[in-house]
Image 1 (tube, helix red, strand yellow):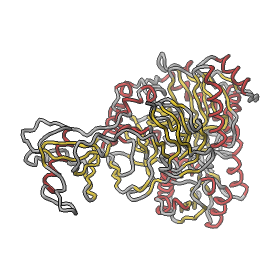
Image 2 (cartoon, rainbow, N blue to C red; image 1 turned 30 degrees about the vertical axis):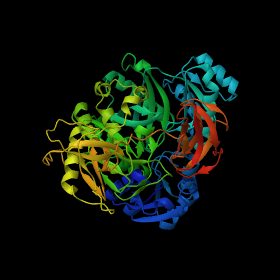
Image 3 (tube, helix red, strand yellow; image 1 turned 180 degrees about the vertical axis):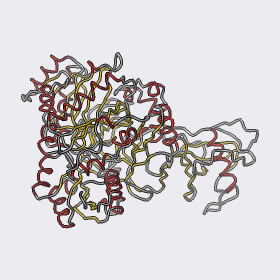
Image 4 (cartoon, rainbow, N blue to C red; image 1 turned 90 degrees about the vertical axis):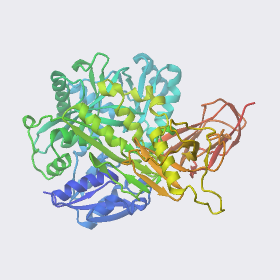
Length: 635
């Protein structure tokens, strides 16, 4: 058995591997960049090695530094986690060449499944059904367009070396193909160093299913059943569950059998996932499920499989890498109950899922469910990496029980000042379509407006906040000797059915509100913690945070009209500038594309007008809050 292990990753997956390794008596070594010097995975490991500057390409993606760290610390093995170098065959081979144990599949298997076009050809030969599409070597844009026309729209352009939702574009009409292809190739080149693409038929009622497979060095391969990952946004998984709703035993046997054949075709060793696309227009049927790709690593959503099978997949990885046979045979594995996982991100769904970076001054995660995280309160969400805060995982005897537990847990998440998607997750989990098990991969996009509408505080919270504010400081004075806030007759804002005539004038998330107060009847559910920060108090409700403070201004009219200045929402690189100074633009028109935290974000015109100032330059790095474009509103 391996006795010492270096984890070539960061965040929650590094912490997850450390937990199992420690339980098995294995010494752990962490690696870290400048940005992660005080990270949780560094604090938890037995030893830690600095490997470079904050950008991943200068630290976590530099294989030579990671191998050097393993040799310097006497580590016997390297676990790559997921992302970064986990599916890099050259790195896996380099690890093995210096005599270290690679906790993952053989390099040849990674290579075979790493390129989507070659993998699909291999799967066809192995008798695994694949989606219709073009896998050819000819990458001429005209040829690709002709193939898409022949397949019939909608089609999906996918990076050959892609993964994690990167380098994928849906195209609904021929006239949109050229722009989508260029964008896809640009993102693929940036993310994977390879701009080649393939074309697939886009399934109109798609569900994303995947099967967990495991192989050992003795030729044994098993599956650990399926997961459903259909709740996605821009091809990024948001909520996953196991098993898949609506899956009958005959269909399960067919899809899991196909997954095992796929793994056998590449002599697979270790943890892997075979991903399938299903046409769910008539429910799940074995003849309408097709192979998409294989992920030759542990998946982010592996906890739901662990929950329903009772197996520790990281332990399986370490035992297999040590040369042991699989811990269980196929007939010893079974499904017990249901599990659902939600990915908690530092982002604001109400603002186009804009990533939120900064220090987690206040963070309270639920203790009722399984939590996988790489941060604690007072840690920092960095702009250099994926903004995941945690994975929240629920188990129940039934699907209904698991969903209810997870929805309740998401509603109790408290985080400030960093914004999270907790309230968005709760809405998803409580949607009727998800409860019925009928969602497709397009569900979030089709309901984006209602799902992402900014949360509003309940009357109960407003009443509690007003009463609490009145109780704490009705006669308090500010530094100028004026009342900290006023109790006044109602003039505008929220009206509650309370009998008292007094009102507290306050602001909620910078919006004015006059709320009537009674005799300090603090009846609001106080399990929703409040945190006082000077004059401000933060109240939490249903996964959202509301900042309340005294408001001595009258008649503030909300956020006010934009002056047309388009600011960089966070540090990043300008990918493209799509307008020129003096150009007339329309509301919603793309002005600039910014790449930050591994995602491209289009900055758009707030109204019809003319570009009167243009400071954005393609390829330039920009800081947060920098003016990139200014649009003057049309008269």
